[in-house]
Image (cartoon, rainbow, N blue to C red; front, side, top):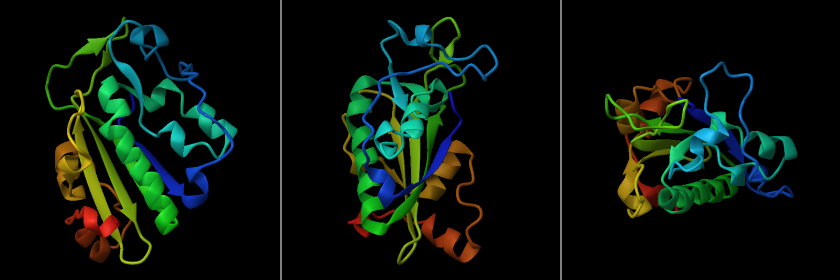
Length: 195
């Protein structure tokens, strides 16, 4: 599974002529052991996109590549179609509204021992994170941390500052920003700023 996935979502890339493929495939270039389709069969976990197929309708190759298992983590099906999906839809709406956004997301491993699936022991994350940065107008950022369970929470209950997500994941997001911008946007997360 990926440690993280990052992409620049522009307004032009929020839609397009290429529909969802549902053609997950194994990434042969990754050394073994690696996730396989067989690992997910009968596991009770869905194949949850990190960079969603919905962000890749603009290009046939991009859509195809979004179904690589290196862009996928074991995800609760209710979460995948619930609050995680609503956050993905929000990101596309924000890209259309502001012209573009920068997104980083991935799994959160909270425990020392993890549930695994399949012969290749694919790790099931305890949670997922997503951070979104917008530089149009007054720069702003927002973070989300969502438990990998039935996903009954509402999106607003999953909001965190980017600083919080950095503390949880150990990653430094958006380090190329000037400190005067990075320090401000990463310390605040108000959903009202995005409406």
